[in-house]
Image (tube, rainbow, N blue to C red; front, top):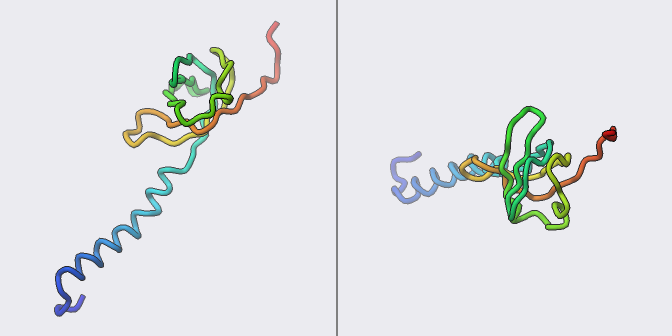
Length: 106
């Protein structure tokens, strides 16, 4: 940068460049992810999903249409679409799709 530029312009330019580089990273963090597994339990606006890998994920249902999860019971197989919370401790659910089993238990 030219030495004649006022400090305000240099600061503004540096901030703008920083935002331009950070924007794709923030957009990537908000891309919906898919989690498949079985309902472990559901109560109020919280669902616990047991993934096929053995992980238990807490899903916040406040943004999920109630019709997506009404009638779910433990062991129902589902796919949850959602984003990670800012602290990464739970999934902010967006939708739930029920998965049909290929077999029927006797």
